[in-house]
Length: 449
Image (tube, rainbow, N blue to C red; front, side):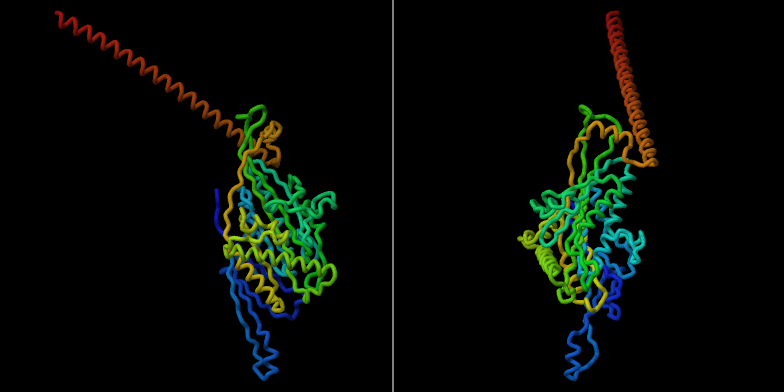
């Protein structure tokens, strides 16, 4: 089943930070209307005053409308409910889903996506958990509550650093570096880890984050120097309730295969503002170059051009399936409220407006899997479910078996009733035939007499 639509776009402005003390704020968000207003100051004011003109500050307002906006008071939970939850729902149905975060460096992308649940004071604060931890928790809450289906969850994580693709979960760090992008969004040699619990998956991503490259710049104390891509594969098949239909201890079942991709794009940065040099200058140059390539494919897709330059960078090749491919995609753009960053904010919002014009067609990924005898036994035992759900599973199995027994009994009763009706009909027919014969005999005697 194909679902058509477009990329869903959301905008979030973060609270002001210490380095912006004294700066005027230039961004207003209206959550009710989905509108974002940016006030741009007149850059020629000083020259105008020197020339004897008015000192009054002239402002130009630009307004944008998105699927949702989040102001400085918005919570991480609110962002998840609007941005993350619908995508996870699609993935659980078998669609591919992607969530991308875009914006200038220090705009709050990594906080919105990856915060593990730590407050600004360094103490645990679950309310601060970002989209990815919430997606993981919600995924396993759903898996644990669904007694009718069995799920398999696998995870991978990679970074694109200086146009090099590195697997962040591989045990051999040398072999995990410099991987090739072989097919459409496919990376050769990327490690996938099977995860049976939310803790498994969160630890998996925590391990990967430790291998990400960060650095301090004037714009951001912990600036991402690479694009980070998190992927979760979710396969779903019906849970076996009995051994009906097994062949040699195995059974074939229909299954769906969804894939969730979460992308933390490194922030674009102006070299003069960030003050980077040396190795960080090379990193910034590569980041800006790959983001430019990404912007070009967004522009081409928005304008429905025939040629889309996916091969211009490793980033665009990996995101080919997420943007304009077989995928339901949401984009979260993050911005600073400071007037000093107004040009970057406008650039980010213009990018978001173009992305909102990208049309998508996504289909449910379906197939057939072979379930072995051991898995069938595990299904019937309710393995993978907690105690309460096992009880529910047992009750459901008992109910299913009762319904089957009742159905079989009803079928037997209907069969017997049908057979009795046929016998009765045959007996009545025999009686009618005999009566006809007696009538003919009687008529013959009467006519003869």
